[in-house]
Every structure is written in structure tokens, then in C-alpha cells.
Amino acid sequence: MKNLIANKEFTQTLRDRRFWVAGSVVLLLLLVATWTGFQNYESLARSRQKANDAARQTWVNQPEKNPHSAAHFGTFAFRPKSDLSFMDFGLDTYTGASVYLEGHRQNDAKFSQAEDATSLIRFGEMTVAFVLQMLIPLLIIFLCFGAFTQEREENTLKILLSQGVSVRSLFWGKVSGYARVIALVVFPALVIASVLLFAQTGFQPAADTPLRMLFFLGIYLFYFLLIIVLSVFVSAQSDSSRASLLTLLGMWIVACVALPKATANVGESLFKVPSNYVFKHEIHEDVEKGIDGHNPSNERAKALEKKVLAQYGVDSVSQLPVNFDGIVMQEGEIYTSKVYQKHFGELQNTFQKQNSLAVLTSFINPYLAVRNVSMGLSGSDYAHFLDFKAKAENYRFKLVERLNNEMKTFSKTGDWDKKVSRDFWAKTPDFQYQMPSVGWVLATHWVSLAALLVFSMGLLWGINKSLKTLKIV
Image (cartoon, rainbow, N blue to C red; front, side, top):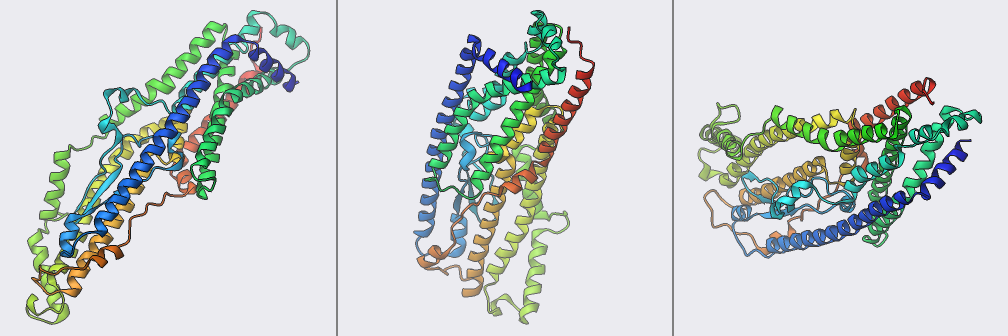
């Protein structure tokens, strides 16, 4: 019986011209978003690879110079685009694309796309994720708002029930029918997106990419099914088609527009970040006076000299078999790294507290849960950005450590004329960013996944309870 009802809803919807108009518009937007997103992805990926190669060549082709001068000269680490980022830009537009790596300091990521964009970027971007998260639910609402109310208004519901159809079969039959209709709209675009995704790698993608794509498709199909169930349920509970449509549109506005903006504003008000001037001033103070405020740089230098002289059993730094300047620079690097990690860690914790409001709100708003997981699977969320920054900083520290050790081991104290050959630069490892696994993504976004599950179970519980006492006529 459910299958008969599903076939009836499917056929009836296909005969409705309004579906073809609305469905065609949404499908067209989905195809345009897929193609333009892929073109944008290819352009950025090529630009970043080209810039990365240029930075490497600049480093390798340095003339003979002092290792510490090379540390100040520095290099760049570019964040490669993830394969799925053309479907969900996430925060990529707003986070920097590269980090300048140099001695003594950690720099923030720079050169985001938003820096060069116009003020229109405040209204969002037309991406595949935007269409899937906001426009497809809107299409579902316009298709499903009259699922029960229209039959109730036309008095066909009583006839159906008189044929022995249970309310439960009627409900899930309608859900199944509308799910087939939505599949007609979404399926072509997702197939094209998958072909583009795998074609760019010559159909030899990384081991993680198919899994990410599989989870990406799965989370959206589950999301659409949830919206269909919710829309049919609201229709069953409403007295008229008008009331059903207004209720569903109100829920869409609150879930997709008002609540995300409100949580972001409340988060910014509750957890404030310091200004750029205050942030840098606090770092400078900690470097000069010590992280605890009682260990200034001059006392740290004296203690280090005393410790090194005792270690080598000599009376002055000129008697050391190694370059004391190299030791001082490396110890200074270790200390400043601790200072930067402390302040960047506090800043990142503040941003994560701001984001935590949106994560918690996802227990009542599946849109936010899907948005978080979608960005994570696409590699364009804040967690992936922090992972890139952490790996770039780890590379920077090892690079500077290598240069300082060269000074310490192969020169004497005060020998600032010490130079290394060009072969040394070529032997320095290049920075290669490896994205985390899909397991890491799921673990990072487990709260959003749990929220989606809890919301679904709550909705099913409410439906089962309501269908028993549903007033059909």
C-alpha cells in the first residue's frame, strides 16, 4: 500500500507544472554552482601550486649566506585546496591561503579571497552547499506543504481511509513519493559533481577522497529525507494548506537565516577577541618579561650562559667548542614559540567558543549540523584551517632549528660571517601539507552528527505519537 501511495504522489507531482518550473530553476542553479565552483577551484589550486613552486625555487636558489640571515629571509607555506572544496567553500574564502615562515615569530595566515572581494560577499556565495542546504529544503517545502491539507480540503482523505489505508502507511507513502521527486532534481547535479571530482585526479583519487564524497552524499540525502518527513508532518498537523505553508516558511527562515546569524552575534558578544594591537603587545610583553612575568629575557640569557659553560666545563663563551650564538638563538626560538602557542591557543579557543554556540544549537536546527559536517568533509572548516596552521608552524620550527644547529655546530661564537653553500638550501625538506583522514573529520564533528541523530529520533518519536491521535477529517 505504501508503494501505491508513493507512486501516486510521484506521478501527481510530475504532472504539476509548478514542480517543473521550480525544480528546473533549482537544478539549473545546482548545475551552475557545480560548474562555477569547479572552475574557481581549479584556478585557485593552480595558482597556489604555482606560488608554492615559486617559493621553493626562491629558497633553493638563495646565494651563499649566513644561516640566521636565511631564517629572517624565510619562505612561504601555501595551503592546497582540498578535492571537495569546490562543492562547499566553507571558510576558505575568509581564511588565509598562505603563511610567511620566518625566525623568531609565528605569522597568521594571509591573502584570503575575501580581502579582494567586494562588499557583496557579505550576502554569501552561490555554491553547491548553499543550494543543497537552503534552496533544496525550500523546494521540498513548496512540494510537501499540501501533502495532507490539500487532500483534506478536497475531501479525498476520507475516501482513502475508508479503503482501509492506515494513517501510518499514508504518511510514509507520501514521504517515499516526495523523496523520489527530490532525487530527480538532486541526482543529475551530484553525478556531475562526482565525475568532475574524480576526473580532476585522472580517476585516480587519493584513498580518502571517495570516502569523503560518500559521506558528503550520505549526509545530504539524510538531510533531505529529514526535511521531507518534517514538511509532511507539518502538513498533517495543519488545518489548511495556507497555515501549513506559513508554518514551514517560518521554520525555514528561523533555521536557515535568523538562528545562524543570531548564534554568531551572541557568540561574538559573549566571547570577545582582543584587537590586533593588544594581541601583538601581549606577545611582545611575554617575550620580554617572561610568560609568567617574572622571567625577563636578560635573566634567561644569563642563566643559559651559566648552564652552557658548566656543561662544557669552560669559563667563557669564547672557549666553547660550539657557537654560543646558535644556542642562544635556538633557546630564544623555543621560548618565543611557547609564547606564540599560548596566545594563538587562547585566540583559537575563543573562536571555538564562539562556534560552539552554533554547534549546540544544531540539536534543534539540522541545518547547522549539516553545515558543520559538510564543511568538515569538504576540508573547508575552521578545524582544517587550524590543522594547516599547526603543520606549517611545526615545519617553520624545524626549519629554523636546522639553521640554528648549522650555526652552533659549524662555526665559533661571534662568527657572523659564517655562510653555507647553495647545496644546503636544496637539502632542506619542502613543506607538503597532508590533509587529515575522514575519520578525523567525523571525530571532530561528532557533536554535530550526534545532534542530527538526536533531532531525527525526536522527530520520529513525535510523529509516531502524533499519528495515533491525528485528526484526519
